[in-house]
Image (cartoon, rainbow, N blue to C red):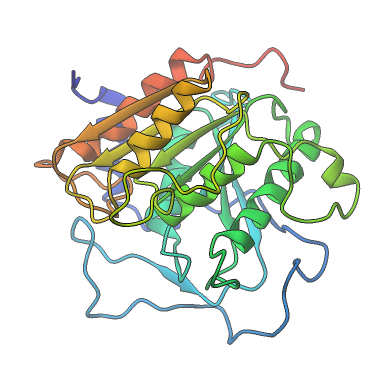
Length: 308
């Protein structure tokens, strides 16, 4: 059953169309690693927006395609103090592990979360992929370190350390999903006191996630293991997405099998890579209203009693 978007969501989308990608400055920007990230062996060309004038527009607007990221960073966007719930979400933009759709699936998402009273933390993870056999590895290392870093800084930032979620799109959905599935098992060696804080997110939102199912296959990748303590997970996908909808459906089914909980919104049409940009003829782009309801039902949009 599909419900109409909330008035708050419609108001947000209307505002989003009128503001630039970087509508507000982050409260904090910091490096994920204290030095060279794990596994780095050679320098990259300078980090840059690789968008071309001929690139496809999304909902009539260009996007930022950030490439050659070698210094992972977190940009922390805070909600208005009177709305702050103490919940936070680390945002992983997509881009096929080649680039990052940094505004479409990053800063615009942080603005939406801020409208709900949630701190949005955009992760600029390493791209392009370093390991051709494990294209996700560098991104997941950056994401796991980020979860620990946010939890380590929770008191300083007045966040609830038990309300730290992760959200990702496409390749960022794979990053977020693998981070959620890994629980407390890191894909890098502990470095310092930050890594004594858990790297397991408390909840996950996976929007048209990729790389859980090999093309043409009807089962999850054999190396994916869903633990019994998998965080509650929210999925969005379209049946006509070039990234098969089975990525969401099969992972959700496996979460159910091990006793976890998931909510799946699968639409007949919508394609791929829409972010939060509203396309009136495509109901899939109303997904933020569904996500808001899911977050509210889990108590994540109410003020936290555990917020410092």
